[in-house]
Image 1 (cartoon, one colour):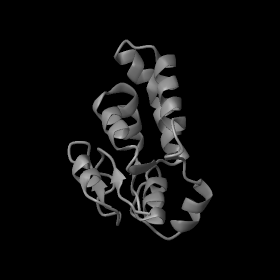
Image 2: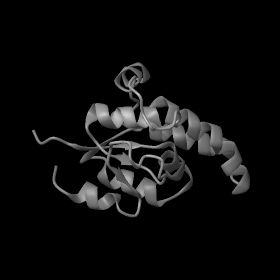
Image 3: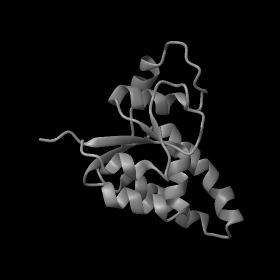
Length: 142
């Protein structure tokens, strides 16, 4: 059995999956060859921002919320990581912001990079990929 690739998705990537096309296309294209993870706090953060983003874009926020739920439950490859495990992993001092530590913890726990558009993760000890480059990572053999 070949080891699968994996990525931890930050909240901004979840929002792009809900409101955009490109992120959803990438997720669907690579879902059979890669595992995607996101801690519960990222889903909660995305859920918190959906009403404002939907209002600005003149979209139905209920539909956007249902898309987020679909993203989180669409397959077993979308796994929410256990917050308790991530807290114990990052109990040591870190330069990562309180909002971002669960993402870094999941990445360290699983030994995989983070997919994000934020620069908050630079210097955190984990590799990061942005949407414009993530397919380079996903296309490489595991």
